[in-house]
Image (tube, rainbow, N blue to C red; front, side, top):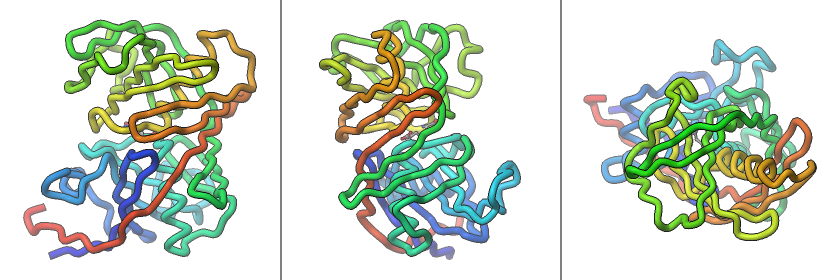
Length: 274
Ligand SMILES: N[C@@H](CCC[C@H](N)C(=O)O)C(=O)O
């Protein structure tokens, strides 16, 4: 029987299981991730964050001694970046004495990211560049919506709606043209609440509807600022079902600030058959 030490944390209720795997001895596969993230038979989480020395990640070309955030969605798929996850990851590193603040660098599949830890529960992360693309049509719950493509290291489609509550987000979206998102997409629905203030619901690739998506909030703010032809720098408040974050958009760099907490440490018992 394999027993792994884990932590559980969340950022605006986007929740994660965290594993320390410095020398890449655990390296969970798809089956392990699905088991751990299952809401009824596992710990339950939107994703898994594995802390591994960057030297063990073949595609990482930077400093090998950094901590690499190996992010997996609840269905076991790999994603390039996670905006809420990286804050929770940094909180985990600090609480496990694996890093010292207030500035912590993290290696990710989307590149190097720098986090600044504040005295309250919040952490600000330099999220890299945001790339706005063209228009697509997304279909979810049998309804077609116009959306804008946005990359925050991972793929997003942002659609503006008047009523967030009316949306049926029980099934995965489809999109046209299909080549717009060859590797799937995270879909954000955004409603304008006020000046530089939006509310959002999200259907995450590899997960389903979640209470928050950090990269999604950055995509939402960037699409909202572009639609309003707002000059940079500009800051947006983004409300999600699980809380509120702040997104600052500057030329070539976005910053995301929000809470990150660890709520449990424990031991996970993996069934023999995995
Ligand atoms: N919850 C995350 C995004 C996680 C990855 C996403 N589901 C994907 O597949 O790209 C966030 O906070 O950014």
